[in-house]
Image 1 (cartoon, rainbow, N blue to C red):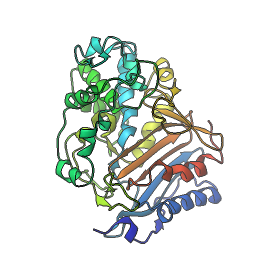
Image 2: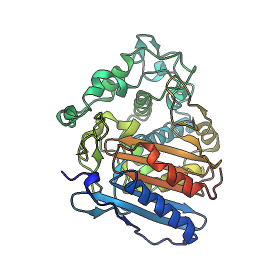
Image 3: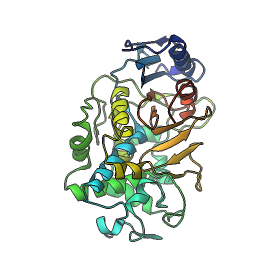
Length: 382
């Protein structure tokens, strides 16, 4: 298979801005995209930005390194943990309707599920799930589960289907890292539990709530929850992954097709840069939640914790703030899964937005550093 390292890195800019920003600003952003491919080794990258001066889309590299197909605006990709912002909005909408409370316990909604091995569902709240202060272990870090996602084991297990209850059980098999509320520990298990509560409250599936409450009202036509469906519908880039293999130059594989039931409400959504920008803009501008729930969502905790998280961040309910080196603070979420890293952030007032995706997973979130610094280092409302 042709890998990103064997393809010549080129750049394209597609889509005309409705009200172009001054050329030096966007030229610098295009240079940052080119650098992500040429120096960072990304197979391909896209970015979509908007501010008071208009909208702009840029790209570099390839959607498919074997054919040389370029990146373009309508592509769908797996957004990883950016999914958590959608899940948190659903929970907060139900809270706004008085159908649940953020200080409700696990035992109230999921009786008997969070119990034993040091866990007590009577002392863990919905809020602590959403801001990762529950102390619940991340099922993805379970050694036996993790082994199935590395190298050749990934190919053997990529079509496995997991139920939410099974993955929650894997998470609870490891004792809590601390008492509820005492610290921050990022855990996908939290968001599986939150989604199970959404299902309990609404009487439908998490996917139905997502579609009815967010995707359809916002007309996010490129966004959906695939559940166990292994392919990505519509136009999409190939998703290239090292499958967590060790070594300085691990082999790169095509990981586009896989069953993401293992990520579900914590990281399973497929979307586009345009849909993410629309969702994030509506969220930041306060159009998805009433004022009280909006304030709850953007009330943050320190992310230092026993396992330090992204530097310069604080975590709210499904969103985080990030202080950039230039002194600007952006808000939103980011996500990673096999072959895809996504960033979706903006100014707190939602007037300056950036969504970006890389269709390779070996360069980490650092691939976005220059892009964020370039776009928000000049002017942004922090």
